[in-house]
Length: 269
Image 1 (cartoon, helix red, strand yellow):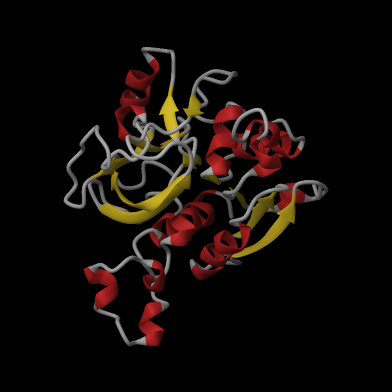
Image 2 (cartoon, helix red, strand yellow):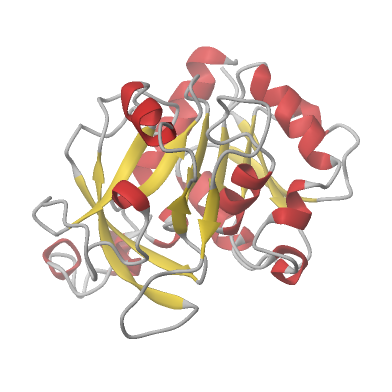
């Protein structure tokens, strides 16, 4: 069986495409950075990653201009055919702005609003913990993760607060098991307050999938927590201190990419 081949779609202003590709390759997939205007033949890829950054300088609001780009017409069509799509940070914002997430209606149902933070206004970068909120294999991106598993991972955004004016939508997402990751403490406690919830997201939401489970919008950066060397000074990293080769080993967030690989091999190839 050939390796899944993933397109990391670059928009002007992105800055995480290289790290995202490295995580894709490290998980055993093939991949390539594909410019937003190289649309011809993009449907041949087995999956897509929309990386972080500031596409089109986040003019108007985060992700909205990228969401209107014609390349998303192709990505939407391929997602409808079951191909996996992972939107990270700015990519998550674009998936929400184009209506792919949460994807219950053919319109935009949520927003990613400016962070609520008692100390910093705007952009906030730090390490947090997210908790796997749904059973293993619920979506294309948690097949290698157990429910309630805790993942150390960084955030880096100014508008990462999942919100909605639809009072029933969150209940629908919970019922549909679409809320895949939630912000938590190191020991897995869900606290709806800073710093556990670093941006004020409703229900401590860190990531949402579509109902089918093949599209995921997540604000934290798994590509920046896929290697032991990338982790902060925690026990998992300290055990490999001084061992260069061990520092290249897989960190917990890489399981998101391993899951994407497994899903693609089973469902697409």
